[in-house]
Image (tube, rainbow over all chains, first blue to last red; front, side, top):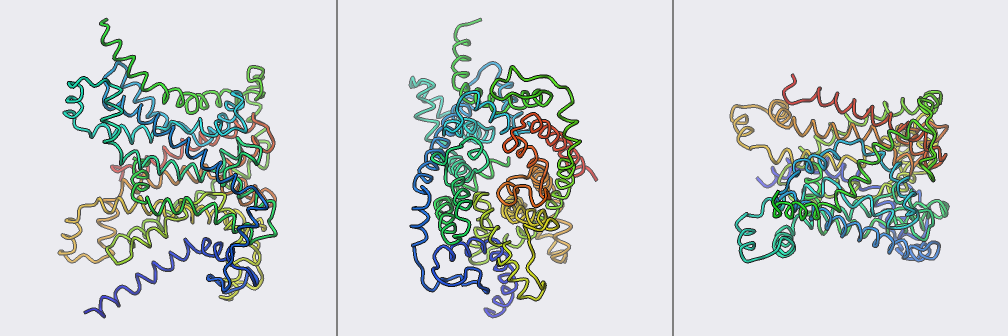
Length: 273
Length: 292
């Protein structure tokens, strides 16, 4: 019996392992290149477990370019984007879900319209707008256009709609103002959706390359995703050093994703619907 | 008009104001302004000084062989769509089980999706290197005699970049299909099983028809993504070698941020948006749940 189960599983696991190797091989190779110290990096078959692991290349990468500074730039940009997105989306989502006002249908339709606007190339005009606002080469210029999107607003609108009307009515009868209702009652009850939107936004912002690369010109302001390409452009010959910088770029967001996978997937679900 | 209603409306719009301002400024405004500026000679530091030039930007566009090449490349890029959809659906079926450690595999398949495109570009640059692992593996399998210049040979570069798009997107669509599969009622499949339908029949007669909405959605998303693909080009080839990897969206980006010719960049992006719209419509007609 046991043997039969094992036999029926073998082809499936082989297939799964092969696909897994396909999707993760570039990462494994980069990691082993970053940690390894001797030998030809292009040896075949590759030595995925370096025999003499070292952190020396990481040190060298940090000395070659301001990786620490890039890291904190990433933290700032991603941090402000997440905080701003959560605040703006929850305010708007709350208004659309709970408050009754004239024109609510039109507002809803306007937000919905942004989903079908040809938006992928907005960054060209947005760059012009940011230039007009004199925000090029600033983190504010990177963050500002990202702060409101239909997906975040709808995700939180849905979360607020799920709050039973009785709870809100009870708080109203107790004399809570709309603002208190939002802050004390609605927001805490929407925590899972806030977490989902937060994690999703964080990963997306941390990884964003084109927009920050367009807005920021001085390397001092670069986030990691931009800085790492700058590193590989400057030190192309030192593959192990570039690999170390690459590992440093991926690691925080990968760890975060692994820890908060559940929330991330919820966010992804919301993004699609 | 009673005062309470006015107060109520004002309060709601106060809540909505930040979102509406940002959406207007960075979602609506760019579409309108972009469409307008595409017909002018843009002065990005003083927009009011932009000169109306009618269709000149578009004429320049279609006179440029690089632009014509990028149309061809973008059409080729659409080949990614069927490949990635079939692979992702197959993968979703494969991981839609309760096997031990299946979550681990799902995560492994998804990791490329949460990786920055700049990192992806660097890593695949190494994979595609003359001495890189791809050439080494193929040589080891005796499939090639001499190293192939995956990114440096203009015959292969575009396909190499497309392959990276495939690699990056596979896990994303897998997760969407997996959600679709898990939302399917079990009873139908069980009934078919009792009726003696084999796995193949169950897949084609039950899974695929029931997944139709998900298939439509994913195909639409990936068509639009392929249509607008350019990030991979930016980080891997910069359009080269010999302009062989210019896609439409890359052309627009390149004109704007490398040549600083925003007039032509906007004209090109208007063309991309238009084609994208037509493709989305076509896709919708073709895959609409009630269309047979």
